[in-house]
Length: 278
Image (cartoon, rainbow, N blue to C red; front, side):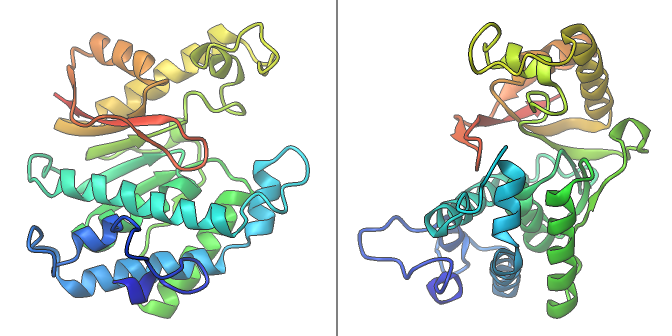
């Protein structure tokens, strides 16, 4: 797979460079028997094409309060690309076990740049349906533009991010929920962001919003999402968000069991784990 991933985004792998997670998933690997090679080629091609089409300068400006033109330089893009493959691999391997094979559908809450790999992995490697929601902003519009172009060029059905309020969305049953860096988002939940990151009263605090209002909206969101999850279901969320999610799960008489050690999310580097919910 090195030929697919080499080029402007990734340099050819050297002998001492760790094998990429995508290569580990390749059918030539004796530990992996599915999915077929054409699905791997489609996944690698789709992810690479999206990365090459993205307006990284505009995305950097969106991510930074000022400037940001060099935020996504070549080393940052390479690191993000590898992180996408790692996340996609974790999700694919877990869902491939067959334990969470109810609805064949995943719900991505707050889908953005960091979620590209997992969403494409589920779609192209496992033929699963994706329901993705986020705010209407320059990042979401840019991702949808590129995903639409790549889908048309490669003849693939790729997921697009819906920009309606999740509170108004008709959530259908799913067996995987991805909710990473949502409840601690500084724009959507500024006061809750300060609390979950333990930044209240510090120089890093947002000092905005109302904590009671943020918590009420976050609890309502968690309840809606968890109620759409089949049992057993798979939940992907960050360690910072987990206490609130666990609280809501308890109110719904649901139990959560960690399936993985934590691994860092792309961009914001929040520790993330996969949880069994039942």
